[in-house]
Length: 112
Length: 115
Image (cartoon, rainbow over all chains, first blue to last red; front, side, top):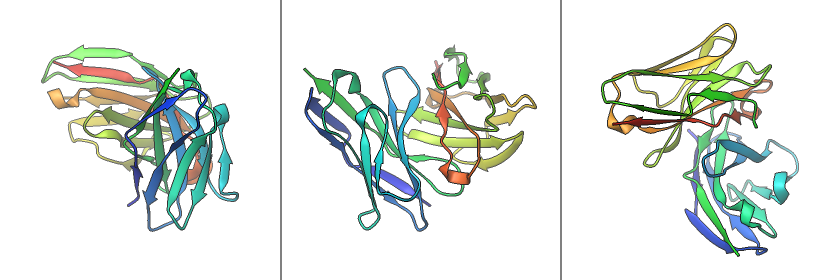
């Protein structure tokens, strides 16, 4: 079975500073990887996904992630954050059984 | 707005009761998933339906059941409710065009509080 570990539960960051959210996965087969964002009192929204091909994936709102097969990682980055990026971020993995397995989430708090 | 709708937004009920949560998928999506989000368990997959048929089961309790109707909307039934069932329940939908790579679009969730 596959699993996801998000290495940071909380990440405080100043506005306009870069941020990196770390995600490691475990699976015995090839996986698909996703990052979702959950704003307060809302559902989950897809930021980006890795299916195959280029290991650098660009998503919405200036986010990007890099798939590293040897490190079994899929870290999310943004070069300059805004107050509006304050949210909870979830890394998720899927194989051919369709369901998503989520990490515990990382809460990003952006301060002015 | 993902295009997935869930009703009700909030539900408060007592232990031992039964409730039904409803989900309408995005137009054209054939697959519906249910997830539970709680503080202690995080986001957990419960069950998936595809075009009316159960496709996969996750950590769903026997007290919980779901179905998908011919118009593709889905209902999650929770019975003999316990305090620990208090959580946010999400529905997601996807087109299921290519297995696990399909993007799942999430609804806004139903917050269930069991008193």
